[in-house]
Length: 403
Image (cartoon, rainbow, N blue to C red; front, side, top):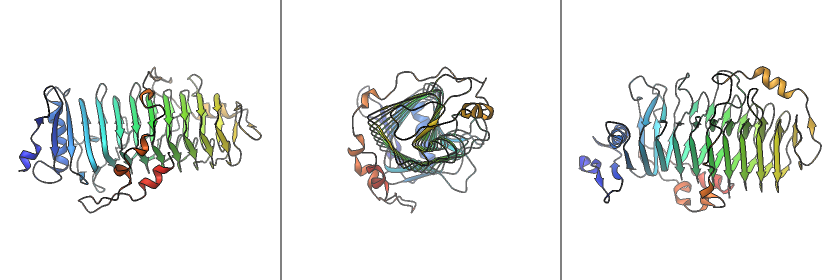
């Protein structure tokens, strides 16, 4: 019976092959999921397939693959994993490793899946606690929660990669970089030269000891549409850090974030050997954030506010080395912040921001949609999972802030 359940059958002529992985049994659980991915990708590793998970099941990994590696699952082909409240996680007392690695030219789509518990060992492959993306990553009605890494506690987006979130949650992740590099950290999402679009989603309660509690962007493009960035914490950019990159928001809330230094809501920084940082906040709200300087926004380059409110931030709404036109209240200027950042910056690679300064994937297909309200059943339920844990009853409440 279990073998029959796992058997791959074509759903239609020329269609993707679909494989069901049961929660338990010889062909089920974490090892069954690993085998299903490897089978779909094939001997050359470039194949594709659709994998369906059992509703409410926790697929718990004890070991990485290969043995001694730093990831539970490696995506080299084109894989879609569909779960109905399913969880993919690392056992808490297992050796340290992350959950997913998406290689260059590969793609992973997760629908209705939670990725949690990832904790890769520090080092060259130490970014992206839940998912390390060097290819294409799409999340729909999914969660990345409770992961940790050197950078990109939940998700890391490498140069040239594309990461898209729709009606999803990145929550409660943590990053702890070994050294200070301007624009690197990303408690929730950390991008270095990638393109990241976040639509109808929530980035909340993530932390980093460096830059970008919710999201860090170094030399790439980040687009936030109908989303909320809330309750995150960092040294700089409690909500978001944009360093020599491009940030665009539309109908987005950046609220109640904390920076121990600069930019409670947003830190718009200049990487010492990079270009300018361009941020445009349209029809958005930056409120209730806190920092040592620039409670709402800390700016060292260019911030354009279009029908955007920056209010009720402490100790001020905007500060930095460059003014923020349209920011209410007195602007607090600082003449030496850029030099301070440069002195502490360190380098990335050869000391320059790579060429991956965002190509075209800026969520044009999702502009103006409120995807967060389409499938509330996927994110708001309290379905039990079969290993005895439970789905978070607070998810729907959290997502309401993104509407």
